[in-house]
Length: 399
Image (cartoon, rainbow, N blue to C red; front, side):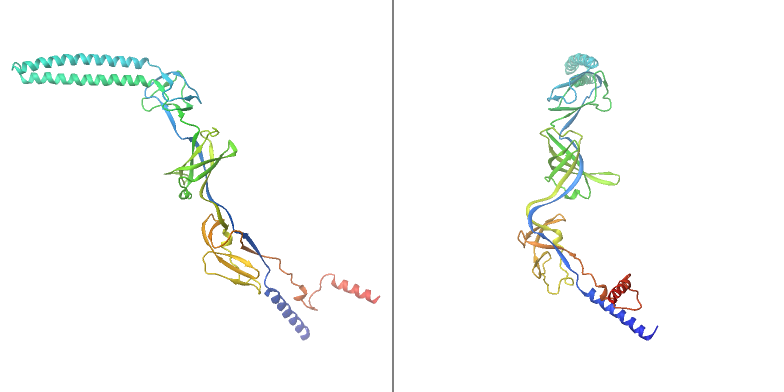
């Protein structure tokens, strides 16, 4: 390569670098996004699933064994407190009662005899005709007879009570949810009380037992508003409130949950025991408050990116919003309240309807002229077809 060609190539490279530096030194075009400070609602929620059940339900059983002789109710039967709903066979119970009554009669006869004997022995003892030992023996026999009568009387009372248990009555006003026995079935109450019926007190007043994750339970408080849906009525939204937060934890598959009781008014009887409820608990709820996008509170203009004729007026407040007034970016100090991470309450500092900046985007950049960074270089290939077009032009000129 000749020295002249070397200098030409070196000069071309320097020109290209200078052109690129000039192109890169220009500031990019910035487009700003705005949002409006306005009044609205701010809320945070916790979601969970739960089971619908009656507020009060009673499992009715029997304390005596026997054969179910009669059943007077069925599923969904409405019952009143004290109403007879079933009866057990009384044959054995009546026999036991008669036996205990006979024992009581016998014990009473023994008591009468021992009392008469004691009175007679006491008279003889007072006259010094019998020994103290004989008198004490008669007194002891009299006391034992009294105890035997009391024991026999209690046995009769127990037998009468067992006979009463043979008649099964409803303890509350309500509706029969479950019937676990049929007529002729034998129930045994030797070790535990068998359940015969399950009665719900009032199906117009239901509740939801929801399982809340341990990460969310700290936000749930009594009195918070709740909405829930059930698959049986997907278009209906039911209302309720938190009535109890139970402190007993449940661990399943290393997941810790806590039970939360939610009221579920059921005037139209749509809700049925056992339905799965998809629950939304409003842990934070403020209505008709001045608010703004939380993103706007995190925005700050970049001095290195603004145009040369634009200025920034900052402030020392910890919380501030930015507005753009012509060529000026102005910070407005504000006092904030609650937030749900997306929207933040504005307590003071700015008026409703004010447009504030919340983000910036890089707009379309001007394309760099390829001729600005590439001068004519005899050692670099030209654009494909360039020479052909140029020759065609020259040929046309010659013609």
